[in-house]
Image (cartoon, rainbow, N blue to C red; front, top):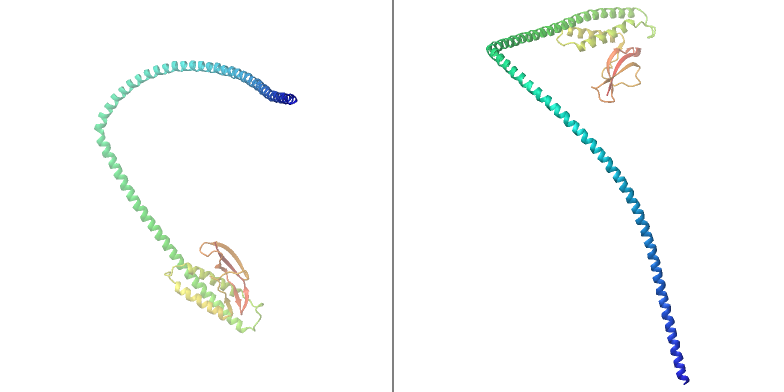
Length: 313
């Protein structure tokens, strides 16, 4: 009996425990369902708010769109009015053009008649005009040829006269330089004789004015000789005279320092004028002209040179 009661009690407790466990599971499910329902309610509220917002936005856009449509209709109506006015003006212009075209056709017809009359008149005189034109052209061509020949001849004559004048001037210059050289030679001889008859004096006290003048004249004559044609009359005689006076110059103790073609350096005791030149290599400085020569007397400089130095670019 006790065993039976124990079994029944155990079975009842087991059943009760099972029932409580099922109730607990059911409550959990109910809670989950309630949570889902609450979430769905919140989602529905959010969707309702968004729908309401979209609705008012839609109403605003619709209102703005209707306003723009109204404005466009007004614009279209204005354009239609302008088109109608333009069509009316075009009709008027077309009518005016038609009338003017008719008038022009009448004028052209009248002008064509006049042109036909002129053509008939021109046909008769055209041959004479052609002959006269050809004659004028031939006469003009002949005059042009004669004038060109005359100008060419005159040009040749002028060039010949210039050449002859230049030759005559060079020959006259040679004659004058020959006479000058003779005078300088005579003065040098007299100076040499005078120095022999007098006791020797120092270089500083000696009178070198004649020698310096002779040196300047030698440089001038040599520069002129370099520019003259070799066929110039009297040129060889002048070259010989210049060489002779240079020998006499040296015999009296004087020396002309040759500088043409030499390279310039800053240590030279000269007065230099510098000019750019494209004929000299870039950076080089060459003495190309002697304005006043350097003159030495018995090894001592008594006149410094004045020169022109060309600088290569």
